[in-house]
Image (cartoon, rainbow, N blue to C red; front, side, top):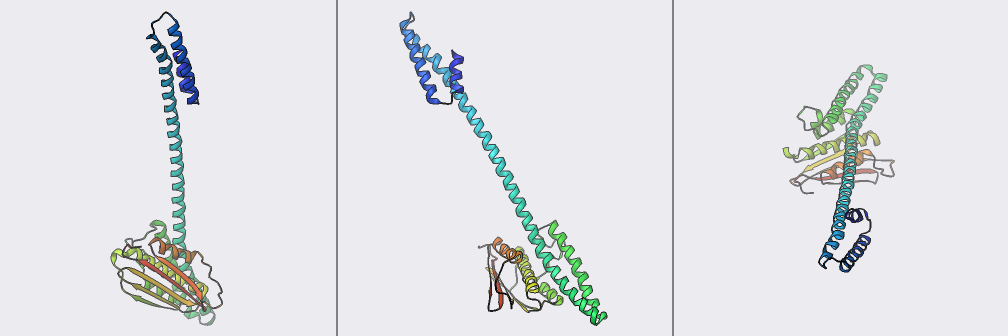
Length: 287
């Protein structure tokens, strides 16, 4: 009888049914005791013989359900962890792709412009082709070096001597040498602790020059970088004749992501035959 009522509490899926059966059995035990030769106090033992194993079985059932719920929760946490890891991997892949686009897109644009200059020199004056060919060689080596830096570090600090520390003036000068006319105005100087923002500004300027060289070849580009105690503003503008709409590609999307990652804002517009871009990034930690 003890095993029977223990099984009732341990395997019944309806607590209401378990309580009704136990109550009925307890009543039967009390009535049987009172009608028999035993003393009335023996009815307590009859009730305990029914209720105690039923309660013990119910406790075992509750523990079993808790164990099952914990196992399901552990499985859900494992799934969440796997999804989080997959999302982190995807974000890192996107970051690598953006970094490679910023590096390779800019440098390959310069190589293409220099190659056109070398081809023109070879047709007209072969002795003048040496300078653009040498520029192509230097740009190619620099591109390989930056690709290694991106793949190896992804957040270069300049400690390894890679050209990731190239400043805005050097970027603008190289673009002018490669055939992208531009004027750069820099107001203020970044502080050493603002290295991440300074790196983002350099990347943004490179992307602006790359876009101008690709979509408006030969057109002058106006660049301005203004550093203050609270923020840095990067502005770029160039003629965009013939373009009727602005379709953000990977370059403009990368600029926006860089600005938003550092708590800044981004805007780009095409109006009156000119393309204008503005990026504002806080430098004092205030988004």
